[in-house]
Length: 121
Image 1 (cartoon, rainbow, N blue to C red):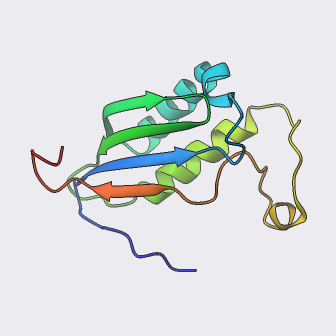
Image 2 (image 1 turned 45 degrees about the vertical axis):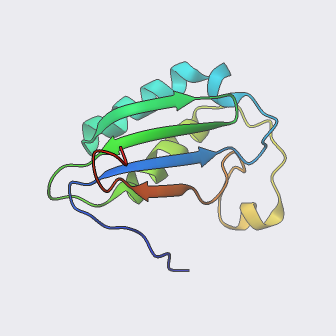
């Protein structure tokens, strides 16, 4: 499935990323793992975290990408996968997720918004 995304090289983006289980507390309980994975991804595919709020079951982030780069979907994919791989396998995984080799920790999609100007920021 193709998604229509705002592709602005060097853009600044606001994201909301959720866990599949909105009653879970994995993000705050395993904040050290999340930080470690974010740093690894930032080292491999640089970006600037302008702001970030981590809540138990979802997070909000504002990122600025390098001037010649629009690939935030790959960065989120790496972050979600890296975080998931470091957690013990205790969650129930539906057949649809098993078929796609997903753990079932994250919601499949996330919300993004390209920041248009200083007022929007």
